[in-house]
Length: 239
Ligand code: UDP
Image 1 (cartoon, helix red, strand yellow):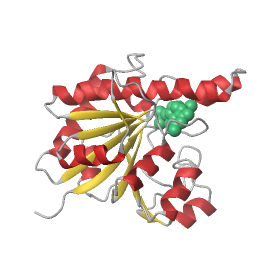
Image 2 (image 1 turned 120 degrees about the horizontal axis):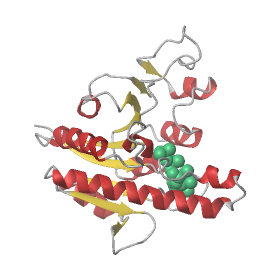
Image 3 (image 1 turned 180 degrees about the vertical axis):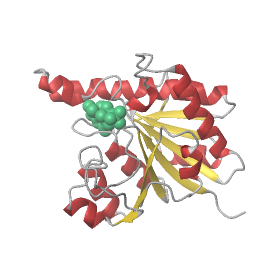
Image 4 (image 1 turned 90 degrees about the horizontal axis):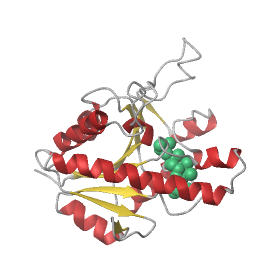
């Protein structure tokens, strides 16, 4: 077997929630995600880091639109990502998958601080690494730290799991335009020039500048996490 593939999986906080049960963090949903990640790790061909968002708990923009100071509101959002990361860690460890949460804001009583070399070491030892608290800076969403961390740890791919029912990159919004078609592959330039909003523009530009391909796929379809992480051509590849 060759070198393991090193991949960053970006998942929205909302992917852990459940509309049906009205839960912010739905135990059954988190368990399913954890089982799929653990399955993807089987066989030892993968080094996996996960960046989890916090949109199910708080988004910086929500507070700002209600008159809050943006930086304070973003700090709340970053803390939300830590809550999700701890839920995911617990679910992964219930699957006997060793996992470490590394936070960009220090809170050493609950998780390790982010140290790049330590993250790499954990990956080499077969642990799933969850990056929490985004980048530790306000005015970003977790898409950008997902791209940044992927570049820092030398990941070959960023997998962006969607939870909105849109299973890749389309020529137009498929929910509004029935003629919209899905691309199997598309260039960064085209995503940017056609303003196809699959991730924050900051993150896409960063990936373009650093030659980091992105696979966009539907996180909510059972089995899709191991598929995307094993290199199956689901969704859309942006490169
Ligand atoms: N956030 C931040 N800096 C970061 C990453 C996240 O300030 O580097 C804050 C921001 O307020 C954001 C919130 O954390 O709205 C939750 O992250 P995000 O919106 O990306 O969550 P997702 O939509 O992926 O669930």
